Amino acid sequence: MKPALTREEWEEYLKDFHTGLPISSVVGRNPHAVAALCLHLQPFGFAREDVEILDRVATGLGFQAMDLEAKGISSKFERDRQDALNSLADRIEALLPPEQNP
Image (tube, rainbow, N blue to C red):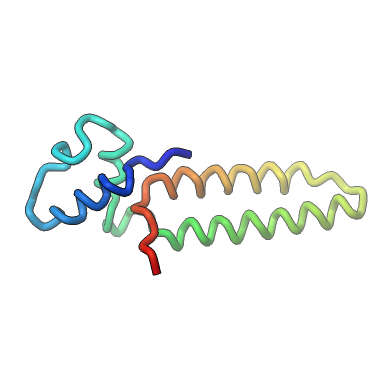
């Protein structure tokens, strides 16, 4: 999924974060970018840790599905939930600033 803002747009916004610069000056009328910026650093927003949790749970469902499949049992429920969690993680990640280089 395409990120809501490019790395450059995030850098511009974060550089001017404390100046009170209107969000529209960074993102124009892109509603996805506005949503990402409005959620940034809010207690009700998203964090990279949320994506990691969803990824771990989805991976666990994948292992459960493989175990069921090895026993000849349908794993449709687990695979469907795994796909849903992966999709949710991707959508949340698209709203987050890019990871900082270590």
